[in-house]
Image (tube, rainbow, N blue to C red; front, side, top):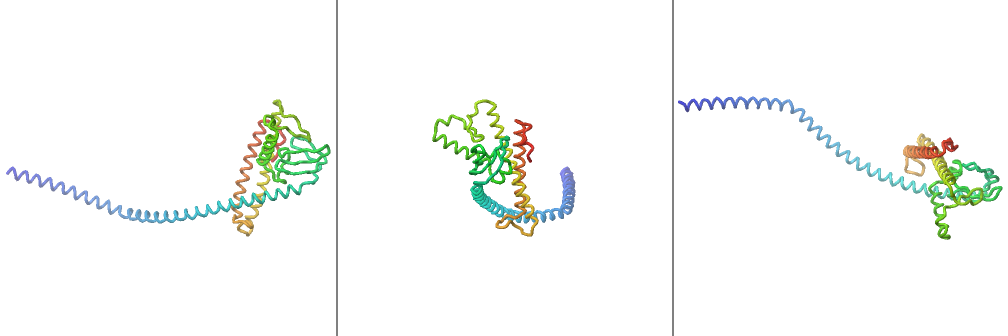
Length: 282
């Protein structure tokens, strides 16, 4: 009978295991029934998300193409504007020859009387005045003249560098000599002491303030024009693919950039000459 006892014990253990398995099966089935709606919703959301992602990828590709076209259009317009600005300045500078300015006062306070413009260049004025002739550089002139004659400090510096190179090529001895400073139609000796070096530095810092003051005035006028244009019925700038709203945004960024550079230029000047009158310019 021992074999029967062992068999009965095995049957009881099997029945217990079968009960546990049935219990786990029922629990799993219950969990599945509870989770099935959520799984179905999740599957639907996943499919919708994949479809939306596909549409967004196509939209992204379309926007990338539009962005490329706009960048090319902006580049072409900037090149066109640069050519127009160059021709405009050439005509403006040529027409200025012979004009009478009367009195001309530089940023440093030097005054010329009975001034007549002989020639306008990227560097500034060549003039006749009551005491002779003179060359007045852009950094010595007020912002109103900068705006009127469309001067740029980088172009003036490049022109001076080119003139210096030509002079050195014609006279190699000049290569080791600092450039002379012109004032009141006279050529003065090159700076030799710290005071003259400091004066030259001050003149350069003032020139930077004048440059960015003129740029702020120019960008402000351009921003106002774009802002007024955006209020009209015309969607785009005449003769351009750029919208008034786009130009307004671009001019706002340019104005912000010019103001930041003006603040930096004034900070540099204030570090050298805290009471300089150029710091009062806006």
